Amino acid sequence: MRSSRPYLIRAIHEWIVDNECTPYILVNALMEGVIVPSQHVENDKIILNLSPRAVSGLLIGNDMIEFDARFSGAGMHVEVPQLAIMAIYARENGQGMIFDKDEDDGGEPTPTPDKPKPNLRVVK
Image (cartoon, helix red, strand yellow):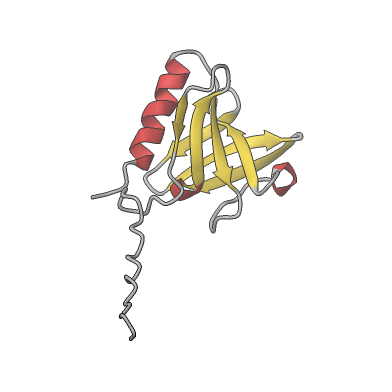
């Protein structure tokens, strides 16, 4: 099955906007494919405002979120792979969703390999 992340992001974005709040996403700016204004990245993360007033041409696709926005007066096309999104929430009250960093493309947490059990023998 496909990852549920893009579907949840679209739904939560719509819910936040319908409630007249400001949708923010927290992005891991170091992930491959992330195109954001580097001067606004702090601690390898960036918070982006996805409100209809802040962006134009917003496309929340299954693999990528894309939009045009202005940062410090300069226009920029922003691209964020879905897996780089760490959270989506309303600025006004913090309600939203945090995504598991270990989620893979299939929407399931990445399994951790089983550690081998110790092989001990009694020595006389």
